[in-house]
Image 1 (cartoon, rainbow, N blue to C red):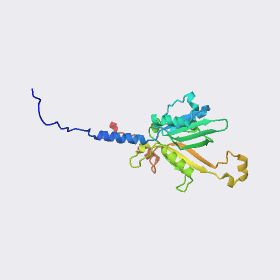
Image 2 (cartoon, one colour):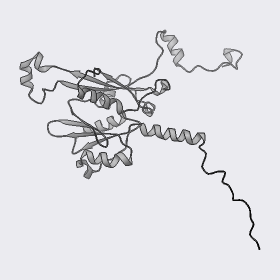
Image 3 (cartoon, rainbow, N blue to C red):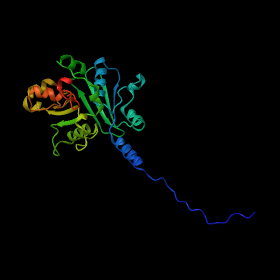
Image 4 (cartoon, rainbow, N blue to C red):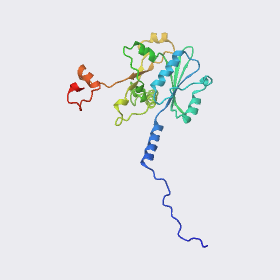
Length: 262
């Protein structure tokens, strides 16, 4: 039997055509990779208040943080670079917060993975979330507020003429949270504000005798104050009665002939 002769078959489909859904998926994955993700840990032995402070910091960094992360007792003495190298690739962590405590001070280190830079702070004073809710008349605690990242506000960090370490702090604080697109952001997503306030005190110039009394550890005259707020949108410039009507859920009376039918 003679084989069938004919021209060679020409391939008409040599590649997969990218659909709109694939393009959207690729763009969405690229946007997700740009979102900063954080990890808050404690190192060494700390008091119970520091454990609560770690939980409050994790709530502040939500939703792009490991809320239920459990530190192994063996890993609490591991260096910060070990966490950065092991977790930055597997979990996509971009920033690590490490709280530690010794007999004289509480230290906070904020590191950018995997190669830095790392900022070191001494925690002078802090207030836990439960302490604030205990003194509030109407404490506001909504889990829906933590479904979207907070709005970041940096105050008193200066402009381009600021010192290099002040610029580094401002850039680090801003890059810890995802950027907000003003043209596309929804008002319902803006439910929290994180304020970083830079305070500079000239202790040696104003009171030299006081500078001698405080000692070498307190000669630093720069502080960063961090505050976490919950915000709600309310109509402004209207009467209280009108505002109650606007904020309340108004029933739909379009299908009724008389208000008495409601």
